[in-house]
Length: 250
Ligand code: GLN
Image (cartoon, rainbow, N blue to C red; front, top):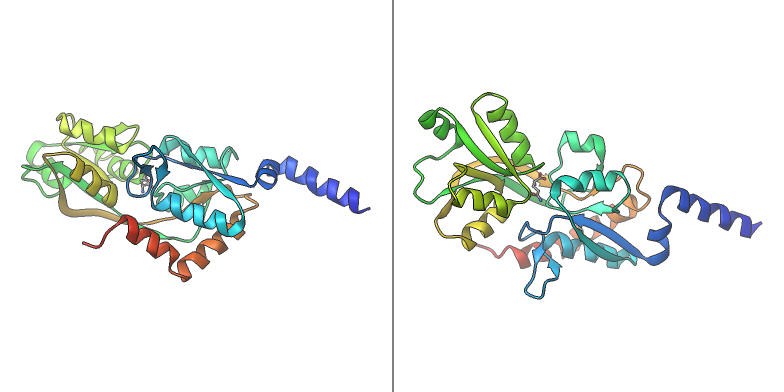
């Protein structure tokens, strides 16, 4: 009898696609590793950052290794939904639209959408550019909230165009080349891009404030344990210590 029950349970795991996860003890995390300090490559070519370290700490607590898979941000939600990856940790903002597609953990960090502009720019907001030029050309990373919000507020309103790039670095290159007036992106990556490239600044006007969370398929078997472990690491200060390591106090 015990054997039959064990077989039935094994069959259930196979059917739900969690056999690999349960057997080899590895969770696959998808991300876009061009989003410092949340995910990026260190000097040795290893993926690191706030999301990577928090995910690994949760994995360690639950007895799993975490394998990082670097893909385009816009592919993270479809990849999680289809069961290709166990979860996404990508500085991902919780939005109502995304909640229709995936389930989010509790929030572990906050992001702000900010505007990067040329250092000598006279404007302080996207509306200033519209007022001065009649329209604005915004660069964004495809599929991000920066993309969504500027599309709604400017492109859909006939006040400008949104150029969508595969990652934030490519959007910043377009700004440096004068192809767009500004880039709308999350504040911490923005600080990194401005520090790495001459001639750019972050405007004082923030665009929106957002909550970051990790995303799981709605039928994920590991979600409850993962979220519980995340909350323990928030409560015992581990998450804050990881954030402080990558975002030094100003
Ligand atoms: N926070 C933004 C979003 O969720 C950008 C995330 C990212 O580019 N990795 O859309």
